[in-house]
Image (cartoon, rainbow, N blue to C red; front, side):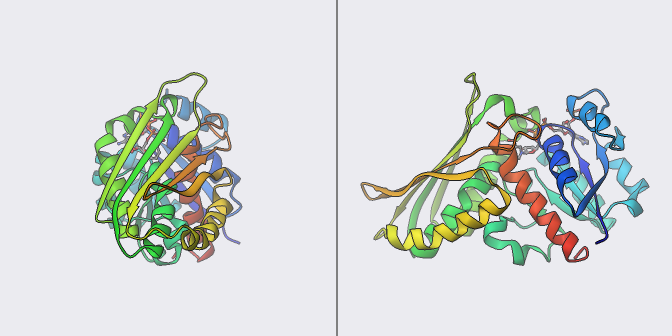
Length: 289
Ligand SMILES: NC(=O)c1ccc[n+]([C@@H]2O[C@H](COP(=O)([O-])OP(=O)(O)OC[C@H]3O[C@@H](n4cnc5c(N)ncnc54)[C@H](OP(=O)(O)O)[C@@H]3O)[C@@H](O)[C@H]2O)c1
């Protein structure tokens, strides 16, 4: 099979973890790792792996447009809003790891097939990738979802400066995703950056206020979705639930990473990056469409 040529824009935690995952893929070849300076740990790692690196940011891509099929954007929401029209004009397939919400939201376990027609896919957020499949299953089994609340905790060390700058966008995009995929009337997303040492694993808890909760029906829909997630995020695990706490449904999820760039505690990198790689591989297997 012909290799699908990808470039990674953004050399931080997300971009570097993505690079290691892309290098493991039998379908993808990383042809450029692009930042805005050569001194970051991500750039050093990419160079050590023998990858072509550039500090020219988005300007690198038009100059090498013929060499690239797909661009992952792992910079920040504000930067992606600037990059998106340039990449669109070049006709590049884009997978956006920032919470910029330029393109439609993609959660492979739920809407992989319908996402394949979009030239710019937004991977929502780490908390969104962990919780939306559960929210979707709740919405499928409960016609009236009054309120959904999602609380994610990640290790401070795994949240780079761009993640911290994008906290408002994280909340807005996660809440919009929860609403879109579950039909809930109201949604709330909370992100805790936990400074504990040793670092904590990524954990996400979903609370749902619904009319007439039906745990058995929910399990029947949720179990196959969880199996699907595990095919691309092996460290995804339901820790608790679904259970009823009073009249609220509660589901608690833990995500362990593969330790590709940061150690295994950083499941927040894996949950979104494995989803992004799964989509890129689909594009590769479909011959780029
Ligand atoms: N960390 C997570 O758990 C996580 C999970 C899901 C999604 N995200 C999202 O992913 C994005 C990156 O997060 P992160 O934690 O990886 O942050 P990060 O470590 O700060 O990485 C961002 C990288 O992008 C580079 N960059 C910024 N603007 C650029 C531009 N215009 N051109 C080229 N490179 C540029 C930065 O370069 P410098 O090194 O020069 O600053 C930095 O290396 C954020 O939007 C965040 O919300 C993060």
